Amino acid sequence: MASDVGLTESAPRLNGDRELPEGWGSDLERADAIRRPKEETRLTRRGRLLAGWREWVVTAMRVAIVIAAGFGLFEFVVAGVIHDARQKHLGADFAAPAARVRVGDALAVIQIPKIGVNEVVSEGDGPGQLRAGPGHRALTPRFGRPGSAVVVGYRTRYTGPFARLKDLTAGDQIVVQMRNEESAILYQVTGSERVSQMPDQAPLAGADSQLALVTATSGFFKGQYLVVIAKPVATQPPASGAVPPAKATQPESTQAAAPAIGGTAFRGGPAWLIPLWVALVIGAVAIARRLRARYDVIAVMAVGIPVVVFSLMQLFLALDSVITYPL
Image (cartoon, rainbow, N blue to C red; front, top):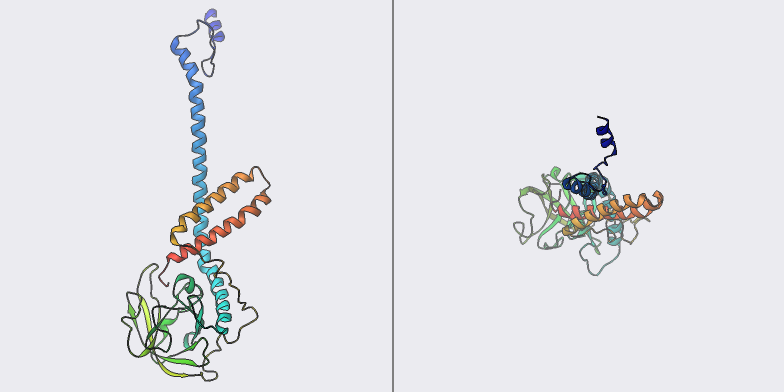
C-alpha cells in the first residue's frame, strides 16, 4: 500500500508536462501529455479572436444606439437650427441683385398671413434646398408666368414651414415677391386637392398662371401630397400692413453672405455613402477605446470627438437625403 502511494506521488502529472521520465507511462499517455499544451494554445488564440469579435459587436451595437438617438435629435433639434441659419443666408442672398438664379439660390419670398408663413424660397426642391425652407420645383414655370409654379415645403421637418397648409381655404391670400423685382404678386387660394404623385406640369399645366403649394399629408417615406391652388389677382406692391414684412427686405447684421450650417460645409452625401460613414464612426470609436489604454484620455477625446461628430453629421445628412418625401 505504501509503495502504491509513493508511486503515485512520484509519478509526473500529465497535464502540461512535456518531458516524462524514461519508461514511465504508455505511448498514448506520452502523446496526450505533449498534445495537450498545443490544444490549450489553440484554444487561447480562438478565445482571443472571439473576444476581439465580441468587442467589435458590442461597439457596433452601442454605436447603433447612439446613431438612432442622435438622428432623432438631429431631426427635431439640429434641423431647426439648420433651417434658421439657411434662411438668414438666403435672406442676404435675396437682397443682393443677381443676373441669374441658380439651384440653391434665393428666388422669392412667400408670405401667407393666415398661417404665419414668411419664408425665403430657394430654386430647386432637393433635400439640400428643402432644408433651408420651401423650394421652387425647377421643372415648373417661375412665378407669374403661364403654367403652374410649384413650391414644395416640409410639413413637420425643418420647422415645418407648410405645417398648416391644410388650413388654407378659398379666398385666402398669398403674396410672392420675386428677386430683383420691387413689385409682388398677390395670389388668392381657389381650392386644394390630394394627389398620389408629386405634381410637375401635369395635371396642373394650363395657359393661365397659377401657384401650387405642395406638402406631405401623412406617412414617412411615401404617401399622398396636399396641393393648394392659388390664382394671381394683382401684380403690385402689397398694401402697407397687409402682410408681415419680408425677411429678405430687412436683412439683419447676422445675415452674413457666407454659407451657414446646412449650406456648403454640410451638404451631406449620396445615399450610397451611408455604409461608409457608419463604418467610419464604428472604426473611430473602436480605435479610441484601444488608444485610451495607452494614451491620455483627454488627448484621445480631443482627437476622436471631432472625427466622430463630423462623421455623425455627414451620416445624418446622408440619411436625411434618403427621405425624399416632404414629411
